[in-house]
Length: 166
Image 1 (tube, helix red, strand yellow):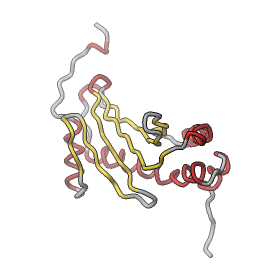
Image 2 (cartoon, one colour):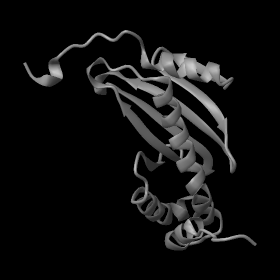
Image 3 (cartoon, one colour):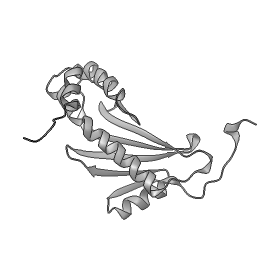
Image 4 (cartoon, helix red, strand yellow):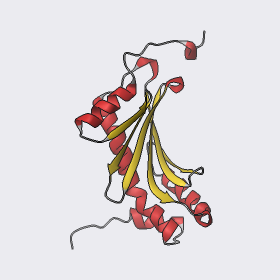
């Protein structure tokens, strides 16, 4: 028997913890099934559409965070370069271009192998990390898609930090 064949029975569905955290934070959510929950979270730059999915076969809680930015066909190549540049900076998770809808999506997973249960803190950090990452790079996507900026200039613009006070 391989290690992957070992059956572990869970005490609860990890999506239940997401629902609990969402309810405790007064976030509106929609539970579309036993293994999925979706919510909209207001950010500084835009509203983010966040979904959590329990992926039993991988024992992973998957987070997908999308924002309403359609990528026109003529900007796909430059957005792809931007995705590569951003993903080289991001420690956890990654951005993708979801070609079915031509939207940008941030993905991250929490591995819960061996029957591990997510804690409130893990769920809150997973969501906060995803939102912080989306907020940090949202403008870069705007610059590339709508201003016609190249990926390198867009990255420089969003990573520029001011020092001192004006």
